[in-house]
Amino acid sequence: MSARVQQVVPDLVEAIRDVMKKHDVTFQDYGAAMQFLINVQETGELPVLVDAFFNATVVDIENATRKGTKADIQGPYYLGADAYNVVTDKLPHRPEDAGAPDMIIRGRITDLDGNPIAGATLDMWHSTPDGLYSGIHDNIDPKFYRGRVITGADGSYSVSSKLPVPYQIPNSGPTGLLLEKYLERHSWRPAHIHFWARADGQRDVVNQAYFEGGDWVGDDCCDTDHLDLVVPELIENGVRVMEVNFALEPAVAMAAE
Ligand code: BEZ
Ligand code: FE
Image 1 (spheres, rainbow, N blue to C red):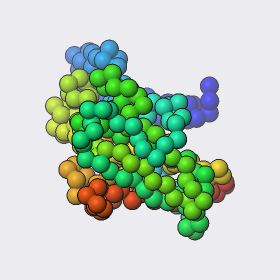
Image 2 (image 1 turned 30 degrees about the vertical axis):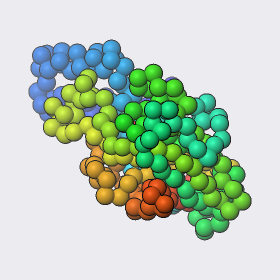
Image 3 (image 1 turned 90 degrees about the horizontal axis):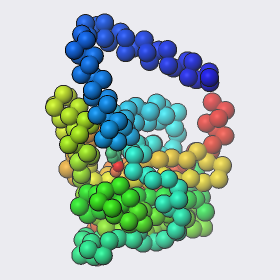
Image 4 (image 1 turned 90 degrees about the vertical axis):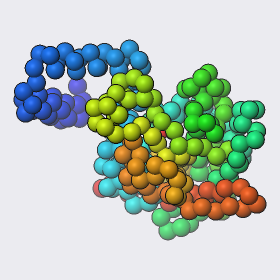
């Protein structure tokens, strides 16, 4: 057993027992909680539920030591590195989305001093113009709305796509029950673009960019309240431009701390 597991798990079990004692949990409560967990398992919602409630906490802990661009939640829809093995300056869209509003995402990846990082890898993924994820929902081919760009000599990148929209995370199963009924919250995420930036020798960062003034920005069901990358509105030739820059810190600096 790893030392980390030995450190964390006993405290976790004790914390749960303390809550049970605090609230005089009955056998009926216990059975209901068990049934809830069985429903989570049977609906396959475990990754969504865990990410909706706890991913942001790991992000907060990690951001405490970050000097560059802050991290944000990855969410459960990344699909793994194989979904990004095509380098492109245009994220593929479904034929039926041809008329949806266009978007350009562009920016630079630099080190903490602003020096360009050439050859950095940026994976990005976002929802369809109707709030779904390829490879996850409705049998949408995983090639859509996902892609990888590599920065040029000046650290810059640019890619075109279609505008994502706010969407509700699955809310007809146990995650929705917990969020909307038991906690009286909502299940909306603001429109966003997911990123994973990596470069040799640098600490990688997973984060998201949001649209300033957009619905649910600052009121995200997943508690992403650090919002390092809320991008002001910029329209060029009628197209929404998202300027998203990343400052990466050296990986060794983090290891030495
Ligand atoms: C997402 O941003 O893709 C996401 C985050 C948490 C739960 C479901 C989806
Ligand atoms: Fe998302």
